[in-house]
Length: 211
Image 1 (tube, helix red, strand yellow):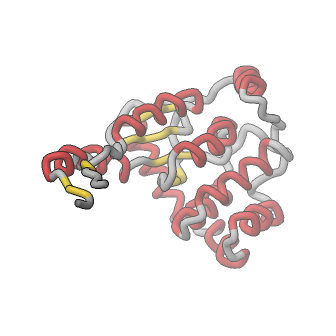
Image 2 (image 1 turned 30 degrees about the horizontal axis):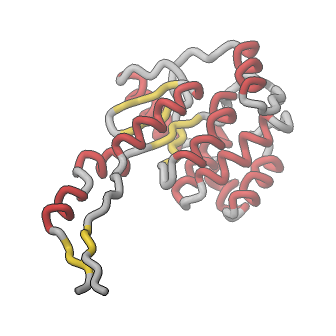
């Protein structure tokens, strides 16, 4: 006799639809001018396979530089303040939005945030953006064109207003379904919520062996 499939077990082993929806709706809302994005991005990329990366502008308070430096030290990450910090990085955010549309959002954000907060470079400098584009594997011409598309600013602002209305007082934000986790220090809590909502593999068959 071979493998006997238990239909009851198979039904019980199916993930619930809410769990699947929550997993599909997981997103990382980032701002390249925010040191918290740099501190969180690598963990987010590692902990949330397939997460959406969304360029977002939130009218929110930022952590003090001393507090961010302490967090970087606790995470064993270098932290260098880039030129003109703190200041918005609109061109870089537009380029990041384009990279996300191409499925290269994670690679671009990781490269750009390292250039800014490990190297101290100004992300709105076209040469620096070119470095991030190359690291992310997106075309330089397309990246620089997107960096000049001011219409993209509206989308980032709209995302920010929605998050702010939902209670987010800072970036970055990890969103898991309807739950939001503002601040890089909430990445671990977001990962726990994601695991709870994600489908769980269970044994769905019973085996009867014959000699």
